[in-house]
Length: 287
Picture 1: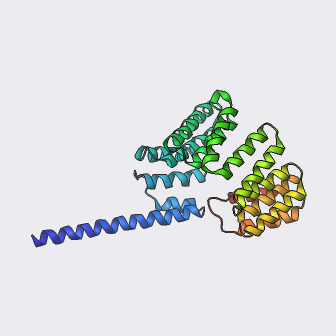
Picture 2: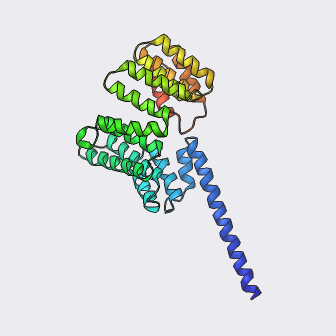
Picture 3: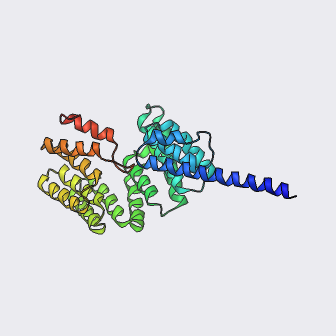
C-alpha cells in the first residue's frame, strides 16, 4: 500500500505544479496585456482552452489588436463557461459593437442588436456594474431608434449611473446635454464630475477637451495645467492635450513634443493606442 500512496503523492505533486505553472502563465500573459503587448500575451495562451479566465484574456487580446471577429468567438466561449458574469457579457457587447462599426451595411444592424442585447444582459446580471451601465448608456445615446437606441432610454440609464458612480453620472449627463446643444449645462456637469473626483486626471481631461471644442482655448489650457499638477506623468494627458492642440490648429511644436514623449512612454491598456498617437504625429510633421 505504501507504494500506491507514494505514486499518488507524486501524481498530486505533479498536478499541483501544473496548476501553479498555469496560474503563473496566466498572470504573465495578463501583465503583457495590461502593457499593450497583445501578441506576446497571446503567444503564452492555449487557444484551445475552455476555462473562462483564459478565453477572456485571449478575447481581450484579440479585441485590443483589432481582430473583432476572433474576439467575439472567444468572448462567446467565455460567456458559455460562466454565463452569470456581468463583466464577460459586457465585453461580448463591446466586441459585437466594434464588429458592427467595421462590418458592411448588411451585417451591421444584426451585430449592433447583438451588442445592445449583451449590454442589457450585463446590466441585468449586475445592476451596479458601472462599466456595463456606461456602455449601455453610450449605445442608447448613439444608436438610432430602429436599433433600440433613444434619448429617453439613455437618460434613464444616466440616472442609474449616477447612483453607482456619481462623477460618471455627471459625465453621462454632460453628453446628454451636448446632444441637445445645451452647452452651458454640459459644462456644469463636467465641472461637477471633476469636483467629485479631484484626483482623477481623466475628469479634467474631459473638461479641457470640452472647453477646447468650444473655442475657449485659454480656459482649456488652464485646465490642462491643473491636470498636470495632479499627475504630470500621465501619458493620456499628453495625448489629450496634443489632440486638442491639433484640432485647434495651434502650437504644433508643443503638440509634436507631447506626442513624441507619448511614443517613448510605457503605456497601459487604459491609454490611447500608440497607433493613434502616430497618426496625430504625422499631422504635425513628426515620425
